[in-house]
Image (tube, rainbow, N blue to C red; front, side, top):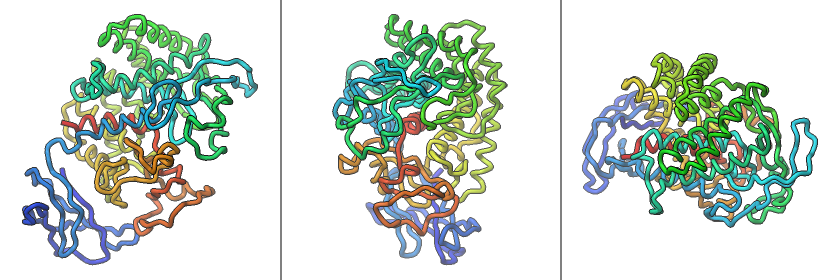
Length: 511
């Protein structure tokens, strides 16, 4: 499926487009513009170009009268390499003594004190070094580290051929090397009994100015917040249960695998006495539900141990979770439904209901987005693609193939701004990430993946001092607003969780 969008103030109802070979300058395909029937932003007319029929490899550009697009490739394997770039971002996010990329070792004494659930301090030092910084700042969160760790391993188990690449030639798949950074940190994050460190560092991180992580003046003053609830326990236990299975099956590293499994079981069992949703920390990454994550934890424990009582609990939690009609680090019910559907097919219906909801939204959007633009919208779009892939894997149905492709193409540049949101992927791409390491490296951020557009109303009451005027103002709307500016932490900050989702999607499309 190959499409493009034309925005114009002219009536082009009777116009044709041409697909021209860039090397020979010969027209190789012609077609009529399809009037979409609506205005968009500052443009009175919108049209669709469909050149799906073109299969020949080559470099091309689209032309309407004397207007030309930039050139692009059509070839088998055109998406190859994107997954590897997205994985590089995790090396940049590494914290502590983990051999980070593009910066030196940092934050050597996490944490220097604890913050108890009632907000009072406990002056105890605990080792939760390592892991990944969450985004452009230097805060670490259990929820997003657990989600990202899980998704890296999930991708590998889903397709070991596509995700088993080993570019550093050390006989360990690169994606599992990175996942172990997360697993190691998760093991440390369970500090005593069933207590978990849910966040490292507080909001002062955002107030001391931009700096490289090794130059952080707060490096020796980073508290750890103690929390724990069913939603966090589910993510934590799911990641460690899968880690135990992989480190047994792939590496026969039984000592490490047993550590992972013991903690996974302990936290899963302790969750029955925990509150439903965690509220520790400084108010970031607040969740609203737990059933889907507990279902995921239970089904992973079932797959690792073979004990049927875990599958029974997984089904119960998964039925309680139902369809969530969304995707984010905390809205991942479809992962559990997919896993359980391999044993009981009826659970795929929850994923189907999600996809029907997303497909209805796609039909009403010129650029084919399957959801409205809230904070972290690109992760949501990638999650829609992921769910379409999982549904097709279980059922063999192609019903949602176009939905999948529209989300993929949106983040790669078929969007109002004509920008790929992934650094150095495509002709035009995000260059001014809200990311400190990138800023001190002249904007370079391999694998950086911008958070994506939001409804303009989200900016109400937010005072962002942009570095530049908006060169793409003509394309902004109330429903989709994006700025490629380093000060825009709403639409232009990359996160480990969005990268983890995108790694799965683009790995699936690699050949």
